[in-house]
Length: 83
Image (cartoon, rainbow, N blue to C red; front, side, top):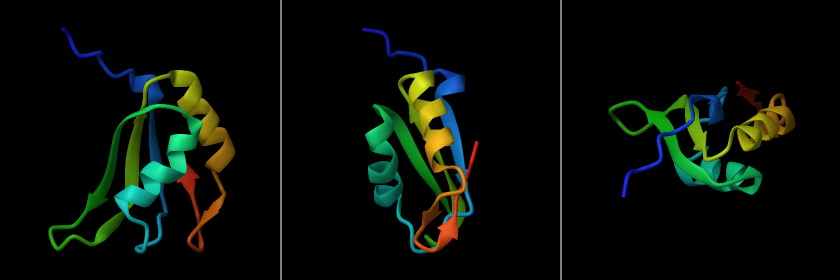
């Protein structure tokens, strides 16, 4: 069975994440918008968050909804920048 190719339009970038936000937090926060295929919090070699993450949704509509509903919203004290 072939893996479904991820839709680039269903991929979002979340910036300005607080250093306390974990990959699990990002996943759980965005999971309510739709099925997530991949979630990656970018970290430095020492494991500290670089302050941004990518979430790959199954559907483009879910990604658009997540951007619309979370851009500018505060998570752990910092306003999210979502694209």
